Image (cartoon, rainbow, N blue to C red; front, side, top):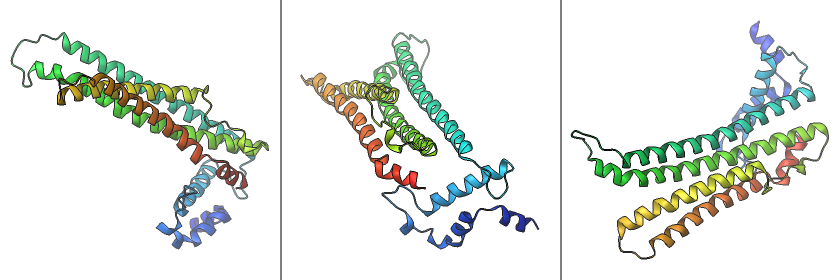
Length: 247
């Protein structure tokens, strides 16, 4: 009896997807489209789960207004994730630099397992190395949230009958771009400072170590900015947004 009721409450598109379960192979993955059969099936099941959890029966009572509110909630979550990611980076950077500075003034008494001189020598290089890697990870997270935000706004525009291409992807004055710039500059600065220590460790007498480190920092910062612009423009092209509108 329960199987029958479940079958009745399952939409036709989900039945059609389940009948073609044999398509869930690596060949079904669309590299250009960014999703395959499995991803579409999971999205369909997730949407049905949300409708059933809300007590909605067939035919689906999900109105365009409900979908609009769903996209609005997702946008709020993405913006919160963006702010949290940048805040985490700044907090970790402040904590690590403060801890490294405190180590330089430490004068402990007693026998340490690791000599204090070794800790003081390596605390700043390790700090700036960690901040460089963290900046790269945060940059990827910001790219992911930006792409998700553009798609959710495109869905809202489609529900309102507006052109999906109204979303400006890489406006230099947008908050997203400014925050990406902050993370990129932080990563570039950390990479430059880390490079100074490593270059001096390899060759203490190198005369242009500072300039070489500055060049490395500029390359890292520029690479993160370029990665943001290229990835956002490629994954949110007009063709993909128009396909979203067609759905």
